[in-house]
Image 1: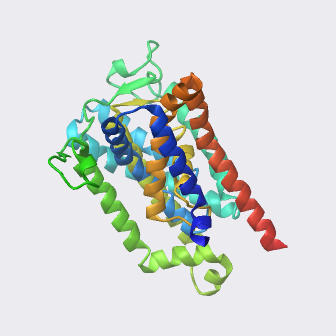
Image 2: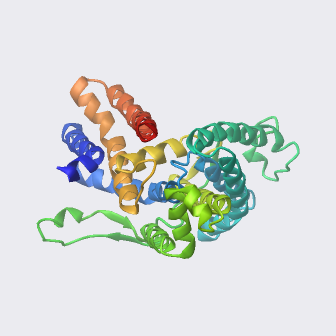
Image 3: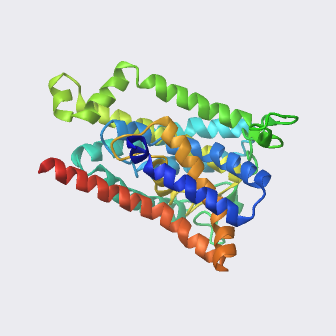
Length: 357
């Protein structure tokens, strides 16, 4: 019973996903291939949230700054016509200084707002988006020179709404694609004809292993110590503020790379919108996997990514078949994204109040 209570959130969403898949009428093959694509392109972003959670800063809505760093790097590769894997990995390298700077600034701000990191990260995301819009809409083409005028609005100032990334689309997704065939084992035969983007999944696997090993290093133990009790960690000689900043930098860098993995799969970047919902969707996925504002694991991140995006796939058709309107499914997807976060934050506030009493 306690096991069910601890995992009630993912259990509920597994049931909802199963029911949604049944009523959607989608074929198993279409669903599985779409889900595999979404898992590969979104897992990195969700995993980027784990380190700040274990370091005691809750859900880092500030990863939107990491997404912006990734997009700035993508713009540079496009303007210099860097193609294929060269373009993608160059973007990863170029995003690093942006992400480190943004992560450091976010960490410094979080240290000034201890105990209020989540709302601070949310507001910071709105502010940073305003600065980002200013740069992309006003400064680009006016102060920041762009040689390729097709990337600019007719006025010659500001990026166009959508920039094509076909020069390095599927750079890692289609480097090697494995399609399972000839499996006769009853449980595994459903894997037949599913496309596995091997390199992308290998990169996600390496990230999982790296995060796992990180928490077994001295720095990882410092993350845990600070997350459990800042005061005791300080007394024990841990430089709390420094450790918290490093945790946010890690998260921001991973978010930048995660956004680039996402964009190479999509094949274009919505200049003024691709980054906006990154934090919200990643946080919702992590919470659906059973994580909380104080505890998160790699398994919860991956499970949450699967369940969250399974709902995204089945909801419109399930809503149309049940209620006669696909819009019902869209409303439910919005509820999943924002409702889960609201419920989790409310429970967190209640738990803190109980501890005070």
